[in-house]
Image (cartoon, rainbow, N blue to C red; front, side):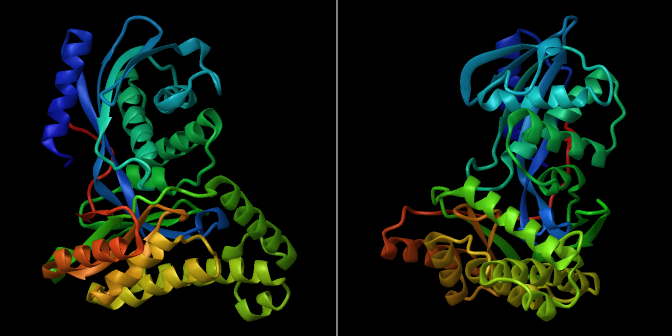
Length: 383
């Protein structure tokens, strides 16, 4: 459960802004991806976990068709007319909750409401603060309106809000992790069928910890590079005569038919899908999670050399973590900045974190931030 302090603060802010108590509090988590990067838009496999960090929304229904929005991080109230919502009509942070109200109309009539929200997912770290916000607001507005929306349907509506209302291209992994998260489990998602399996993952039971290092590296060329790689994958699938790169079975034969750039991209996607399946098989069988560490590191090498989405901060963080004793480490998220994860012995959290910080200092990088993550529950009502 997210920190009670955050929930209490959002409830208090609601009373201060609205002058009444909210009807309830709702929460949805951010996510970190254990393995399975840039596979989602290739109909492949991903293996995220829901974080203990997330977004809390306090809300109360209104008798009119107005949606009033407050964020504890921005003093400016935003008010929108539910009947006039359309893509591009709301800017900034408020576009995400407004877009969720817009998308949710597919499930039924949405009612007016006053919403106050805040979150503790680090912003700009690639940990899906936007999906967390969307799903928390979606659950809130659905309950206030008496709409019955299952978890996968809510994730798809949240993705539509981000893609079509906010105008940010994304796959559905982040929203599915926010909706389907489960304590002590990873969310194994087939992005083609949207089938979900909860795979046990409890590092602490094995004396381990999953360390998340926010490199605080500024994201560089994300939009253009993402679009370029997505287009390359689509073109390669067409050349190979398969619906998506997930369908490549003979990798060596496929690579022989492609130019050098496409060859590297395809090699990453196909081998990354294989790594996801290997990690799932190991954890399903009850293996010591330490055994999947080399697969995590191999994922990073592939993302660095074949997909070319790392930056120096990510590579330095991975190298320093491994040198300090991590069993495996990799960048997580889309790349070009963001976070690194490292699977470490529980007693070595401080040692590995300090080693990364020292390496950043030697390279003249800004100091990173680190925290231990564990698989947590998905979107839910808190009260």
